[in-house]
Image 1 (cartoon, rainbow, N blue to C red):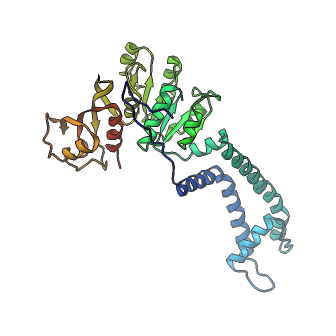
Image 2 (image 1 turned 90 degrees about the vertical axis):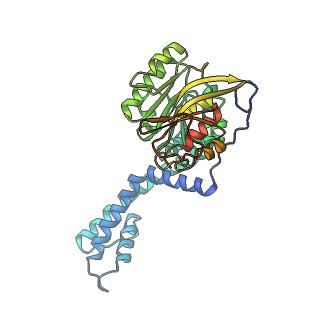
Image 3 (image 1 turned 90 degrees about the horizontal axis):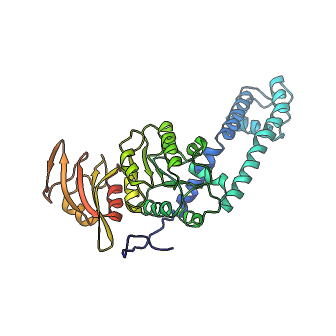
Length: 355
């Protein structure tokens, strides 16, 4: 993979690989969610049948709860042919049909999903995306999109990607980062819902179609009024005007911002100024310290050293210190104006989020 950066500045992008147990757990959650209705139907059948067996006296008295529920399960598999009393006879005749429909349908669907998982097909990607919460939805996996994806993954931000081109050459990179990619048209509401827009913290719309980007921004806000919308527009003048619109939190021109800065926008930062120094893009930006963040209660000197930045100003309860004392501890709700490189801004913004 080629390193990303601006000008002569390069860095290696570390791809996040989930630990094996985390992958297994994520798959298990996805399967439970996908088959929730099948499992609920099975549990309901076993519960109803088990209660009827439990309250029916047999030749050897009343069965134990475990034996009663086991009898109900066996009836679903056509292995319990009780004929007395009438309601157990009805279960013996009707439950095998229910078992064939519920269990058979579940086995077929599970087989399809396991094959889809192996080949990275769209059904499994949809299942994986369904378990994400407080994530970023990235629309468009072009040259800019894949660089933004690398920045987000490198700072451990969960991402779901929507890309309509099935032949996209960046798919292998996204799959290597264990990121779900939905091969869908982002302009369809169901595509946004499947990507988890209602539960996402931010959507980054990074395609080269300005009108489609605006349409998706409106749809995203409609599906999730609280979502943060970051949108790409080719015309810088239009981007500056539309960033003040109520549907968009930040609009940018591809020529004016680097991928690290776009990734930082997803984490609720506001760029005040950008500049190039020896081929490296630096920014002055506002960062809001969330309650329970990693940098709360730490002194400014530690933050500046850990994130290679300089804090130019600190605003607390409407009062601004410029420059602030390096020994000043950071508090939740503080607004920092920092000067740093674009790629370090993403790390700092992620550390300032809620824990």
